[in-house]
Amino acid sequence: MTLAPVLDQIDQDLDTATERLFDLLRIPSISTDPAYKEDCDKAADWLVNELSDLGFEASKRPTPGHPMVVAHGEGPDDAPHVLFYGHYDVQPVDPLELWDNPPFEPALEDTPKGKVLRGRGTSDDKGQLMTFVEACRAWLKVHGKLPVKVSFFFEGEEESGSPSLVPFMQENAAELKTDIALICDTGLFGEETPAIVTRLRGLLGEEITIHGPSKDLHSGMYGGISINPTRVLAKIIADLHDETGRIQVPHFYDDVAELPDDIKAQWDALGFDASQFLGEVGLSVPAGEQDRTPLEMIWSRPTCEVNGIEAGYTGDGFKTVLPAQATAKISFRLVSGQDPFAIRENFRAFVESRLPEDCTVTYKPHGASPAGEMVTSNPAFKAAQKALSDEWPRPAAFVGCGGSIPIAGHFKTILDMDAMLIGFGKDDDQLHSPNEKYDLECFHKGIRSWARVLAELA
Image 1 (cartoon, rainbow, N blue to C red):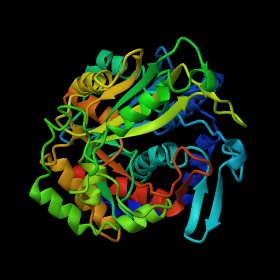
Image 2 (cartoon, rainbow, N blue to C red):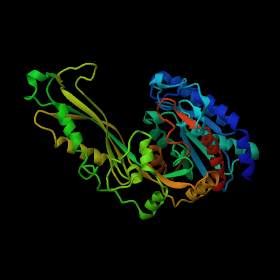
Image 3 (tube, helix red, strand yellow):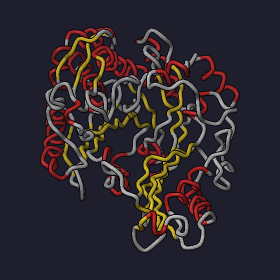
Image 4 (cartoon, rainbow, N blue to C red):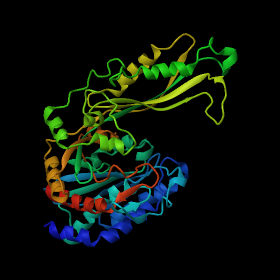
């Protein structure tokens, strides 16, 4: 089966492929809001119908939350079997007033950087999900069959913590296990370099509340003599890092390995411009561990960040009150080797060692997932690297990712299979924000890229 006519078919079919994506984007499948439960069902049904029309054996599988979509296709007996994962749910659209157009009325828009697809889910993850579907469509239309055996696994709760994912994978492990999983929920490196993510940071979330007096106090009557939980919380937060940016939680770095020299050399060769990266968000100076390169800070070093603080009166005007309690939401991005549950216990001990008399603390955990590191010795990685390099202006790079995609780890721990993360988003796609977009060129070249990957994997 030759590749060239498949790529020609993709080029000819781009307009109708875009319209098909628009049909999916019009479905407001917001997984976090129960008001959109029927829309999540509708999105799952849309995918089942689309895959069934292509000849896949597709079905919608119920869960306690939103349904999964599973589909299987045929391929040569001696070819690899790949499982493609994506998610059809999207983030909420608030604040709605910041959208230039309705978020679920997708449109093609001209911008100074070229044509973009605009609307919620264009990049995360419906647009990316459809790049693979459209690549399979082109292969089937030209040759009537695929060069490898393909299965699909789509979930509808990725944007709401995936509560049904692990139980579903455990219950259906035999059906879902293939030679390798393909995940399309990442992006390019820069504008023209395709990227294969080989390491992901894990995530640990902790909400801590410092309790002091039994009620809010008048700052004139009680100020000075009474402990203020906000002051205690501020001291704890200030102690989390030293002056060089190093995290001070005990044993935090015990299991953190140094970046291998060959990987560091590859990253250095990428020419990452930290000043430009930070300049796009109004910053200028890397603020992490000062003995690390900017890419190490993002991809291979753990972090501790304060994501929100609440204490006392925060409305308009002024209220001279000593609050009875103060709360902070704190997250840790973790790297390979770190145990999130051990770090949780060490962090809590760190907090409690700094509590003065008359103060107590309560905790509310918010998830704990380890980091993931991919085994690039798997021949599929080299095959994909060649395929992507043939399509894009610059050779494909093995990169890290500062974010967390727990599904990659679940494939390894539950199904004992490697995962390969390839995506075609850009840093300015405004994921989770108003006016989300996906470059039309990225959508187009993403379809062509997957068609090439399938050919190389055969």
